[in-house]
Image (cartoon, rainbow, N blue to C red):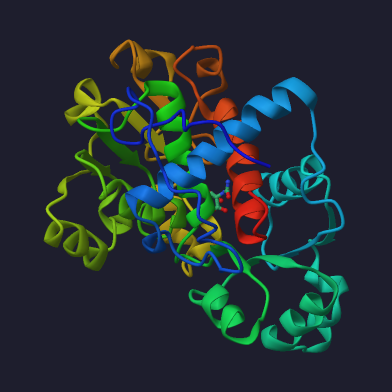
Length: 330
Ligand code: NCD
């Protein structure tokens, strides 16, 4: 398949962007968002945009016919696992879904490297979600086929960050100059870890709003500060709401707490309601990786600024692009 001239410029979104379609992701694992530079993003988003238009026009393609994805999830997932399955199927491929490792040989004590070696004997690419930081990198050490990190504990969630950025581009037409406010559990939330790193490639202001005990990890903040990213930390959303272009809300990650009392002390820290939206900019984009457990009231869903359901759909196109790219078919 060949692609028409690029339609998205990740920097300004105004001019056609000539990303090199040179097969650079073929056979590669996607482990961390730090692997991506601006040119790579143009490449991935070009392909994602092309797939978005093609899905709208024809529903599905035959690009990955004969290819098999192993979807290996050691942690719960609705969106990430189903969107990878949908992405594979929309490209004409098939999948081995392993959502309940309880029912696989993992429950007999099989190690991650052995499970990976097994699945790569059957599949061409493996999507892995696992509770331990660094698990995807470990799997990639043993695998001959590409591993895609679908969340490694509190570490990273690179494909989510890519779809988040693709959403911002689709909703706002560009990134430069935006103020992005991340709200909620910034300590344990892997989506914000990857997204903050990704945004540091652009000229943006990042605000972190969280309870004191759930602040963005200090090493990540200093890593970004060293690159010149403008960042500020708050506990009260009201201090930055009026200046925010993108409000990225996250769930307090209950499963990561060792002390239930500590979770109880922060679980209802922030709730986005229509009253709060009334104080936000008219063109603010409200995002959430989902699932939500009360931090965005359902009364907000009909607000045109609520982008979280559109965000899920964009995820399918970005994951289609990633699968096609690592399989060398884009
Ligand atoms: C996120 C995750 O798993 O990190 N969900 C997702 O992939 N869309 C966010 C979360 O679980 O809170």
